[in-house]
Image 1 (tube, rainbow over the protein chains, first blue to last red):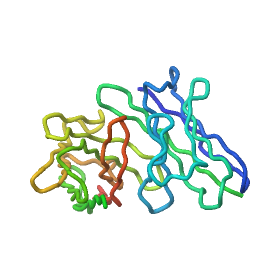
Image 2: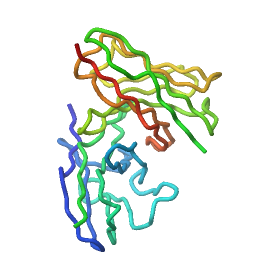
Image 3: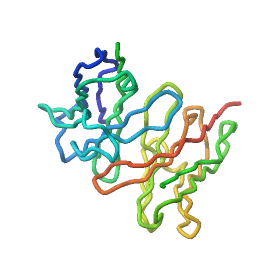
Image 4: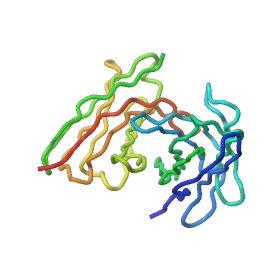
Length: 110
Length: 118
């Protein structure tokens, strides 16, 4: 059973830069996994931020960017703002028409 | 404006059944794959099931295979999830979400809560 790994929590200062990662319990993440990223605040539905590694969804500020760093997918927030405090989930396409989400990262802006 | 509105959640006993619906509007429903994603309160997202735009192909996470059935009615712009033999571990908020080329999910409903408990 493949597990998609994310940092459980992360903290960033207002105006700071933070990089969240999305890895695999076995193997490396590449663009072939079509990594996507979602933001969720408590009680709300997820919001799509990034698709296909680095394509920002409509309306998403350009302080959010996606990439592959080493053997993981990454979401970088540059110039973090208070309302970026949320849970962030990555999802990977595992082939054979199946997807797996990571466990999520709780981002605190303090 | 794309809208996805789930309904049909509620309290059901273990072993029982429930059918969720997702009413879609604001786009040509019959052109898109659709998915169900669930989330245990306080926990992470889990992809559950998908269905091709014309309904000819379906897919499921292993934990629901043989118990859940996804379907759609393109004339009614509605997605369904028939859930049978429900277990306590199926308790979650179920989200309907639209699939896009590039293997991601772009629009999400607000979710419907399913509670499996005696």
